Length: 139
Length: 307
Image 1 (cartoon, rainbow over the protein chains, first blue to last red):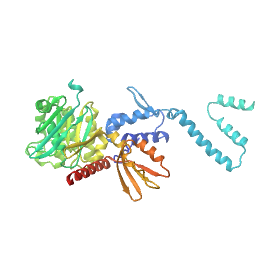
Image 2 (image 1 turned 180 degrees about the vertical axis):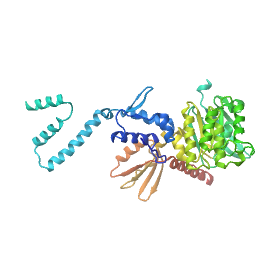
Image 3 (image 1 turned 30 degrees about the vertical axis):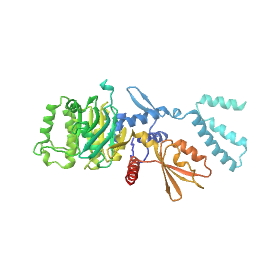
Image 4 (image 1 turned 45 degrees about the vertical axis):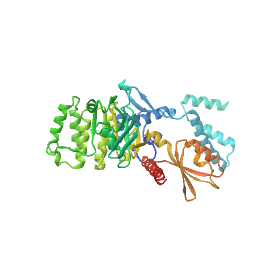
């Protein structure tokens, strides 16, 4: 993983580091479970104060993007834990908004939209829940 | 008791050279384990301050405590715990690099030969070379290696990046990061390389004409010092210069430029309540902040002189 900090950008270096790690996780460059360099390693590599790296790691840990195992290192967390419930629902709302606009343009009826969503949602999760939902839908 | 004291604590420290006040009532506090960058224009008193800490100069007035010791009375004990890289190097020109190291090893019980050898290899300091044959940049690097060799509790570095190319400057930074990672070592560094300072400093202090005009954690400083460019549709609120955190308001064409020191949310809240106002927040670099404060001091001094 290649990080780059730019002093003289007016943004504190720990914030720059956080932005880059967040982006790397979201784009899949850093996979869940992958180990991040140690504080000392990254500080030496970037020639920055080790406290700055610690600060970035601590903030990211608080956001649930990474986690630390004592004596083992720092790792990328599973994607589900990277967002709070509120953030999750907010993003879902945005996606639904897009769907609504598209459906309106296509002159779809509410029933058509709901049926399409149901078919898609049935594909999420294990086969058992899928079956349950289909059965439930049939009733 | 001594351990809980800051690495450096000065109280009303003053140094006058032949009628010229080089250091003027300085109250400096450097926490243990921190990297403190002493910044200021040439002649601000940075080198004088560093020399006072080592008792290479004696104060005209005031008190200095270094690592829990009195810098004047206990100067010998202080020197044993402090590594110092001077701004300009004065070595006996015919002495060889390795002879210098040999001498230091005999003087300092904690001299770290392994580390010194490694840094010499990185900096390409030839052990057999005579000091008089080294370039100015190499001399600075040699002085740096000599300063870290004894594994001091406090490192005083006066312009360690001067005269070095970008590769060497980066290597010096890496050396400092390595020294920092060691634990509670305190580093005081004076430098004009503000981007390098941004990389490694925990705290910065601005010296201006012998006075400390600002001393703050670096992250806090960059987080608080902002500029806001505002366009008011009508005339701006009359009390704008008195808003919390506002240091200065200047005109920039049709816009106003507000220099802020903290209270950003409060100011943005107030701007949002003004009808039809448009604004943008501008981040500042350490260099911007430094120039801003130095210019402010210069201006206020001019006012005093003209009165």
